[in-house]
Image (cartoon, rainbow, N blue to C red; front, side):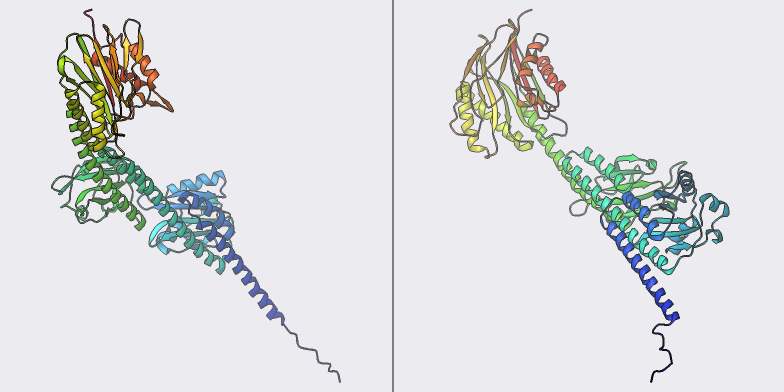
Length: 591
């Protein structure tokens, strides 16, 4: 028997609507999750702060269906925002937004960042108490979302998402605003951290290439200002009692009249003596230039080995500043790098003074007056910040009224090179006093140096003996630039080229000996390779230019004036990067 009673419906109309709403919510949640995952994926790549903000202001409006968006940071002292990126604003609204930012506008953003510390969603801007009707009409503002950006208590900035018309925000959008704030805050914090690490790496490389104290000080000062984006910075060094710090370098803006000396026993500086970084906020009004705003100051100690205070780095700000842990760590890392660089520079300066003093003694040559003979000698260091090289010259008496002339170069730099130079110079004198023949003296000098020099050390030299009475001589060359003779009668330049290898490289090396004579006003010239290696781009000064210079300048100058003119000619051609000796000797006529 078939029942006439209808079968019950499997799904009621109400249940169907509820299920549809549930599915819609799930779809919305899935869409929101995909959008947040997409944002997270994009922000995972480390970028600069400006690049991060530029990406965010384009992605967030799409996620929250906004009409336009901007990112800004807040300056408490000046009571204004600084806009870093924007999207969706026509020109007239862009200018309005800039004006409002500079004038302390955007009360919703201030409230979100400094008060609520959470996203604020305004469904109808006209009904929101702190927004004025006139501003709303000018801004074409109907609804608004203010998202604070903060990380570990540090205020990083804000995002503003604007809508042209009022609208209702659901739970999904509230949740997304919170998630967006967390993701963007982390990305901005990472971008700032990456920028700090990049700047520290650059500073470390620059400090590693500088050896002299003054350039180190200037690098540290400029680097500290860049690292913290300060208005000014200074590096202070401790005086001998370590109770006061004296300014070594200051740059940019800062109340310099308040910081002629820093007494570590006085506040707020006592923390430096204890090895702590200190922050002096502008709100205290402790330091204020005449007619200017109060200064914020960050100061970190520069500690040497064993933690004695070498000095301190100060960074000045004409605004309120509260540095985060990353910035504090960065300036402390710079201080540690600075300590090593300063100590290395001070050590280098001491070694350089010793080497320069030793070299000065080596180059001091008492030359007896020789009738009709004019000698010119020039020694030039490559630069003030270069280490002492092994270039040397010597003029000394030999038996039978002959004169010995040496121009040489010992490989290496610093005090060790200077000591080896002294060794080579005085051994050659000793060998020449027993047998003045240049080939013999060079033979014995080579064997002596081969036994005493390290494997990676060597020397080059030329040794000439000259008889002033006959105006003739003999010369041997050991791996050294060939000496030249300018012939006054013809205006031509000859090259003397007896063969001979490096000194100290191989035992029992044989050295040729070549004779020469000097007529009236002829010039015998020798130099070290620093002169020939003067560089302009890829071009070297070289032997040909040197010969041309000698032919051109010898008729115009004599003695040290001629040696100086030849060096100046190479310097005008290009950069002289090595120590250089130029030596000349001539027999001038009575005219």
